[in-house]
Image 1 (cartoon, rainbow, N blue to C red):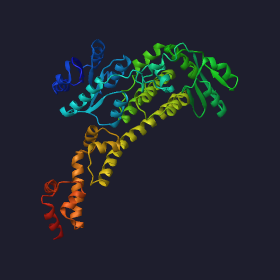
Image 2: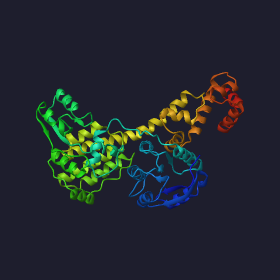
Image 3: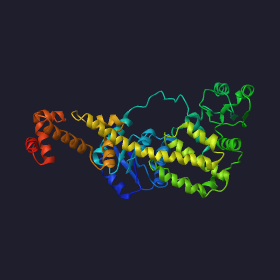
Image 4: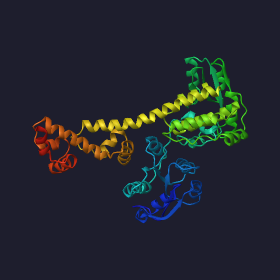
Length: 456
């Protein structure tokens, strides 16, 4: 049974879209009696804080505060709000990120009534389900992601690492650095880092984090190892200061971050628009003249990239930070090269999905080609697949399937002596009358007339 007296918040920077969504459904049917709307995403945060909002429907891309930012806010404040994303963009990366961050559904604009009803039914079902009494605990921490979440100013994270804050409370750690380490040294360090993913190997060195209690043992076994002063992860300003001083010999204070944000704000990261992001980063970086500002800027951007897209691997980000960042201009070129590759990959990915679908249709033309089955082939939700294909090709997927079936039928009519009934079945139509109707709509004549005409 669905809950009653629920509150819905609709957020979009377009006033007409908000009004359209507000009157799209009979919300009472879903147990929603209070509807809040806003075109101001900053105000949306306040509404989430002040009111008990059960369901949030928000555009994923908005000025100042994005839908992704609002979802992060829901996680950080441990709100029970269920989130549905809206977007006018078809890049698969958006859907991936939305689902990865916990959105219950992802709808492409313009949203139709049927899609919204399906999404709401899913949300109501999710709300009705009782949470598990035993919380799920992540067994392995993403060490680099956790470090970046501590030392960076920007907040977007691939996973919510806050659950590990209590795990590390009152435990002291140190950064370490070893040049020219051997495989034996690496094993020794891994054995004494508490079983955590806090060791990063680059072509020039091994760097990482180790419990202070293990320093004496490691120092006696690993030559040329150096350690930072100890710190607690809960003291984020201290961790940040020690990090920059130990690895880059730079003294960083709060004012440096303020100065950086005033002079060159990080570009708005638009998934799937990597080339534009590359141009923005070049433009902003050119304004920076002091080395430590360049370090700050690039580390913040590395955090943004690493925490937003799964395509940036831990080893690549660690190489930027611990091997290349000491020379900011060198690190910049490496990052820009990766952005160019991401841009090509995004374009290829979309084309590859279309080609995979078309090849499958061609090889299974006699079968029932449902959206559900096709969606499983490319790991896309059936509704999203339909809209994705239309936006990528300009043609409805159902129309493409029909045209390929009729094209196959026209060849069989010429190249074989099969009865029209058999051809109908061979191209996936179980009802010959329906096949004949579609064929006549496509070619202007019946299959019998087409065969006689081609023979003549």
